[in-house]
Amino acid sequence: MHCGMCLPTCPTYVETKIERNSPRGRIALMRAIADGKLEARKAFADEMYFCLGCLACETACPAGVDYTHLFEMARAEAERSRALDSVPRRLLRGFLLGFLFRRQGRLRFAGRLLWLYQDLGVQKLLRISGLLRLLPKSLRDLEGKTPVIHRRFSPELIAPEEKPASRARYRVGLLTGCVQDLVYSDVNRDTADVLLAAGCAVVTPPHQACCGSLHAHNGEYKMAGDYARRLLDCFDLDRLDAIITNAAGCGSHLKHFDRLLHDDPAYAGKARQWSEKVRDISEWLVEIGYQPSEKSSASTGARVRVTYHDACHLCHGQKITAQPRKLLVETPGLDLVPLDESMWCCGSAGIYNLIQPEMAGKLQQRKLDHIAATGANVVATGNPGCLLQIQNGLAARGVKVEVVHPITLLARALRR
Image (cartoon, rainbow, N blue to C red):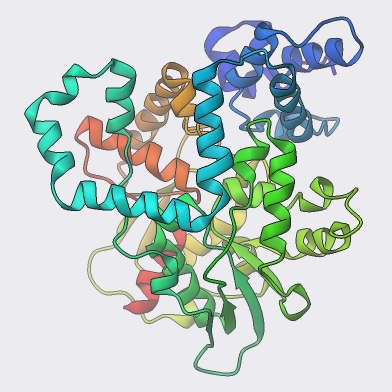
């Protein structure tokens, strides 16, 4: 493609005005390597990891170019070429992607250690002692982004199967996620409560596997397939009307299991069935005709000004924009105010804010400026990475604006 309609929508190109930092430039590099005109060396690998993977270019593209697949295959090629290979990088990726995320129990154990570090006051003591200043700046910045871990994880909050008070109209599976489980297990509980109120029986396997989205987005396509198979084995799809996710980045990947496992004779059929049934929570509630205003009592007290940030993989990856807004508008006690550039990436982009902190910081500040202009008391967004990125940015500015998942606002109204 050469038209360039994607260029004004690409955050990295808008920031640098360099052609190779645009979708058109990156696709040209991919094509050159596919045609054997270039080799996948370090410059190519660096550019693929400079891309946010926000998929705004897909929304803008008049020809419907599948940049998601191109982007994931390009990163996989960068990893196969070992262009960025080093011992520290290999060890870190092996530990995180190959070991820690392979078993949810390992991840929860690490989360429990981090919770103790926070709950016992060690983190606070280190921060006020000044000892962190002895660390390199990159590590100091990383420590500052440490999320607050919840005391109880999803299996402690949600039973393996819960049924609504009245007869269930639907039976759905609930995905608890990885980071979502550790940092936002309360959002998973909120999701289950709203599903119950909507007349859904909720099945939540306590030992779910990682979905592999982090692996697919970072060039480990084979490993992503292994994770997908293990997750498929956790659910009896024939007995479920839908599989519900509340994490946009995961949802975008989950809906492509059919493509990921298309050549696996043992799992291809189940993967197609899975992809047909995966729904974002807002998408599902609107699809079944759930109306919060008819199901919850009238709110009391002052109304809350809420603005909504579109998580990239929800609006660009899954084309879901109207449904979350519809639910927010219909939730009692809320006034939804528009956010300029609501579909512009906040800089989180999976682990982008960790590997490209400078560009991520620029996008974060741009997003925060627009949030400040709304005068909102609350920012709603449907992805754990976005929640953390915006929360950390607002905290650094000393701004007291609550950042929550839209489903949490709906759950609060139902409880009132």
